[in-house]
Image (cartoon, rainbow, N blue to C red):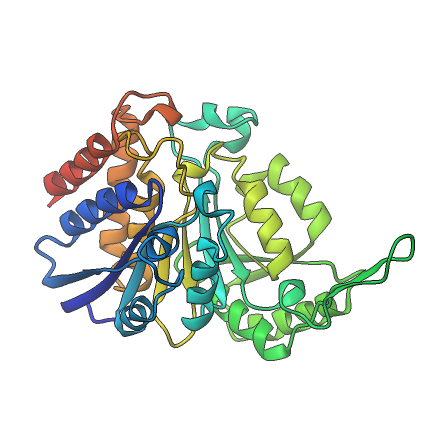
Length: 359
C-alpha cells in the first residue's frame, strides 16, 4: 500500500478484445478521481496475452512482468480470444503466470446490485435489491494446484485423481484478508466449507475460528457450501464478506453473477502477498464487440474503486467513484448490454464528470 500523497506507479496491461477500450475508460475515471488529491499518477503500458503473442512475445513478456513487479499496482483489461486458440501459446497463460509471480493468493470480488438495475437479474427484483456481497477466494491452493493430479489407464478401466491440500498458513492468510476487509464494512464474515465431509474443510473451519479470535470486533459464521449456494440466491442480503477455498470460490463467485444479472458490472482484485495488487474487470475480452465502442466499462471503472481502496488507502475516493457510477446508472447512461444506448466513452465521460462536480 502506497502513501496517501506522492507518486503512484501504475502498470497498465490493456490486453485483448475490449480490454483496451474499457481500460481507457477506467483510466479516465481514475485521473478524475485523483484530481486535487496530491497523488501524481505515473502510467506505463505493456503487452500481455494475445497482444503480446501478436508481437512475437510470450503471453507474459519478461519486460511486462518486470514492470508489474516494480509498480505500486497493476491494471488489466482482458486477455484471450478464439483467434489464439489454435496457437502453441494461450493468452490466458500470461494472466495465470502474472498472478503467481505477484504472489496473489487472495481474489477479492464485490458483487453489488445497483439501484435501478434490479430488473437485469433473473431473480425477482425484491430478492436482489440491496445485495452487496464481498467474496474473498483463496487463489493459489486447493484442488487446482494439488499433487498428485492426472488420469491413467485405458478404457474401460480409466482412473483420475485430483488432490486437495491446504496448509494452516495458506488458510490463515486469506482469512486475515477477509477479516481486515470486513472491518471496513458490516463486520460480518461467512466462512464457507464442507467440514461435514472434507478433512481440508475441517482444518479450514478450525483455523477460521482461531483467526476470528484475533478479530473480536467481527462476527464469524460457518456455512456448508451446498446450503450456502442455495441461501445466496434465496437471501443474498444476509451476507457481507464471504471467504472460501479455491474451488468453492470459483463456483460461488460465478453463481453470484446472477444477482446483478451481468458480468459487465463486476470488478476484481488479486493480491495479498508482497507484490502489488492486480485489478481487472471480471468479464472477458468479448472479441465480437471489440472496436465498436459499446463495451460496458463499469466493471473496469469499479476496479478503479478497488484500486483506490486497496492500493492507495483512499476509501474516500473509492466511495466517490462508486457514487459516481451509481449516479450514471440513475441518469440511465448505460451501454446496450444494460438496456441503454450510450457508448463506452459516454459512460466514462459521465462518471468522470460526476466526480468533477463532486470535487
